[in-house]
Amino acid sequence: MKSQPVVSIIILNFNGKEYLEDCIESIFNNKTVDFELILVDNNSADNSQNICKEKFPEIILIQNSINYGMSGRNMGLNIAQGEYIVFLDSDTVVTPHWLDNLIRSYKKNGDGLYGPKFFKKGKSNIIETTGNMTNIFGLGYARAKGEVDSGQYDKFMRVSYPAGACVFSSKEIIEKIGPIDDIFFAYHDDVDYGWRASLLGIPSFYEPSVIIYHLSSPVLGWSKKKYFLLERNRWICLLSLYSRKTLIKLLPFLILVEIGIFFYMLKKSMGLTKIKSFFSLIKLSSKIRQKYLISQKQRKYSDREIIENFVDEFSLPTFTTDKQTSNFIRFFVYKLSRIARRVV
Image 1: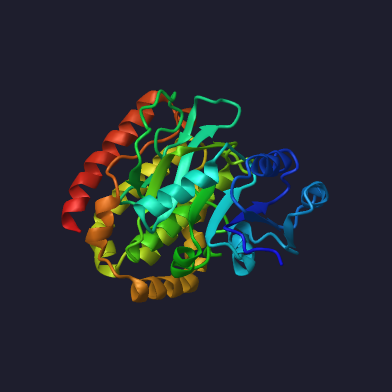
Image 2: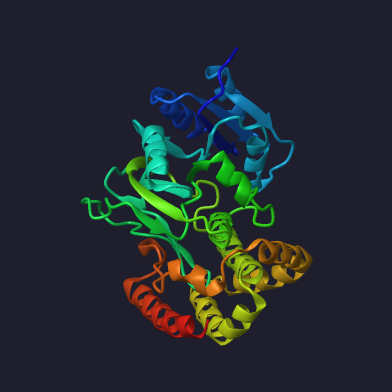
């Protein structure tokens, strides 16, 4: 009889012909832990899923008839047999002992969500993220993105949430948090997941001994569609995860942030995109309310306790705007956040 795998690796694929094979090959080339690899395909048209299944017959392939977005991972979660679970993006490449180090860190530091140090794929010393952080206004960002690595982020630490490209935990903890919410489709689903974990008292950690290379946003890039989803989904998090009392207290500050974001997006010829993201929330109002009721019923910690692990800073990727604008946004958000934190 086949033994139960230690880890279930769940990879979501959508037209990943250019990078999926490299990802899976790196996993099998670095096999030091018994695992099962579950490939969930979101109705790819490039046959990448079947090409990989033929090359790596050990793969458990789940073929979806439509694109479920990031919630497609739930299909893999439903059949996972491992003691531990890894959600892994198809545009990543793993390195030696990645699973050993994640398991070791989990056993040492306890229950939680764990994420690695990410480098930009093709640039071995350019950081993609060293653990992701959330601002009090729901602005999530990748810590140290674009910096040259010189070992300055080699310390294990608590973060707001692990980047969705690689999330590791025990199956028991994943089941406590629950499935990936299908309301997001893409982007901020990882912010939501880490935030929901925090409501239950489950922390998120950055483990620097685990190195993974990541292409990042291979489908949407920094397009209008991505900005639309980022803004819409940020507000889904705010409306469903904060209590109503906290939202009322933060409302004046959120209005100022919204004005700032609108002018930023207007400068990038995306003012209409921001407006569309607002109206899309109205269409989703019933689902957001349902999500809110569930999260408030399940929560074990107050918003004041949750935001202790949020930051006042916010950092835009350097390639999305000029240095002067970036510095002003960082200063504006920081000062506003420092004041807003006192009223929660």
